[in-house]
Image (cartoon, rainbow over all chains, first blue to last red; front, side):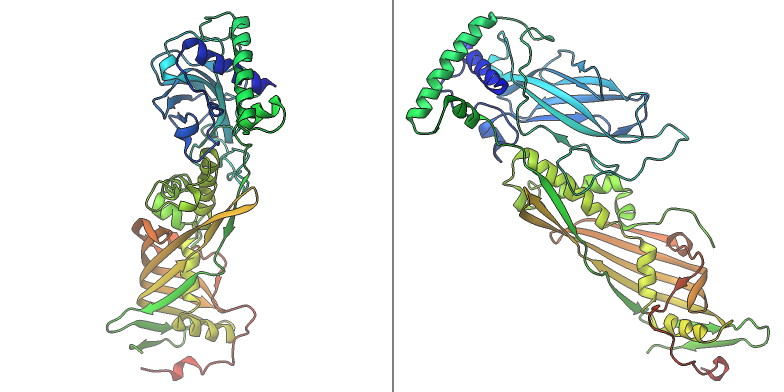
Amino acid sequence: MATAIIFFAFSASMVVEGGWSGVSAEPFPSASSSADVNSTGPSFSVDPDKEQGRPGDRVTLSFASNDPEWVILGCNAAFSGTRQPCPASGLDLAVELSVPADARPGPTSISWTLFYTTAENAGGTHDALPSQDGITSFLVLPPPGGDSPGPGATGPDGSGGGGSASAPPITLPPALPPDTAPSSGSGSLPIGIPLIFVVLAAAVLAAALISRRIRAGAVAGSAVGAVAAAAPPAGQNVRVVPHPEPGVQVTVREAPPGLTHVVRLEPRTGIATVNVQEGPK
Amino acid sequence: MMSTDPPVTACGLVFGGPANAAAALAQAVAPDRVTGNQGLRHLSAATRDAAVRDVSVVGAELLDLDLGGLLVMGWRTYATLIQAARRTAATPGREEIVDIVTHRIGATYQPSVEVLVDEVRVTAVGLALTLEFEVKALSAVIRAGQIVALESGRCATRATIAIEGVPVATRTAEHDLHVLIHVGNGIPLLPAQNPPPAPFPTAPQQSW
């Protein structure tokens, strides 16, 4: 149900601002809804300025939109515990984090959330914005003089998002949007229209949308089912299976010209020493 | 000569370390690259990212072969060394020093990484490692069928890594054999399951 609330609120925002006509069932952004991300939702990049660091080191996590039609309006991130909000500055945002002093050496992750909207609505007021959560892998190095980190924890199962010591920082946004809607009064997001108005507008719009979809035969079943159909597909489990070659093919060649090798037999008994030289075969 | 240095591996030689290797392979495997795997193109962004990451990490591990081990594999097929190993294995206490001016050892290794999405096979990424060693002035002490010391020798190595048949990285380097091979308590040259054949004629009877 929380998903539906986000969808309604987002759709209502589009209507109130007057910037989105012909709302389809797929405005819901998701990085996993289609291979052609641009046609179905925004794509964002979240990158740390370094892949690894020691406890206490500073790490800057940068947020950027890969699609000019979508704008990031807010973000936050943390290794663990309290999230650090991104300062509002320009279209691309960044937050500086500190590797926790008690972080254990080895792979870990940075959790982040970004809030976004369409470019044409970026300058307006917003009650509740859609958001996207994700994690970025990070390698905690041991303090100077400490033990080296163990081997990477990455196994063949890639669904966990945890990197290994050898893994580059990979951002894995969730396949599904977050289960909870961002609070309309939280963070730095400005409050514009009263929430009740937005909810009512959203309900009206949703009802109209659902009715249209049912008429069009796009959705069978209840209105809840229609909303669920608008959500991106569930996350997929990725697994890789190594297939090492049974054996390495090794060949040995003599050096081509002239004397190829010299065999010197030295029994080391202190009695006899024989040198044998062989020519090419 | 004993050494506690970590082994020199193919990925270490080419990329400088496993982290760099995984990052480089990830760039090469990504479907928007020439060498990229097109089977990944139709996956969703998140799934594709996860697949590329795991393929690159696992691929880097598969290609991280110990160069010294590959050299020894070559030596185990090298007649001159094998014959000396058999002679010393057949005669307890016998020790031979084998000097080889130059020889070359080639090694190819072609593993692959299969990608499963929701347990459905999507594609397989083919990797290839090609190594060319040129060993110069090898002087090996052989006793009881084993290399027990390397008195000299250098090795020039050229390593090439390819993805889907397209070379993505090549590196050459030259090492002292002591860096590549840690003799330890001895490197067996003869298969354990095959006992050495009948003793060879005694060495003084050979001449040239």
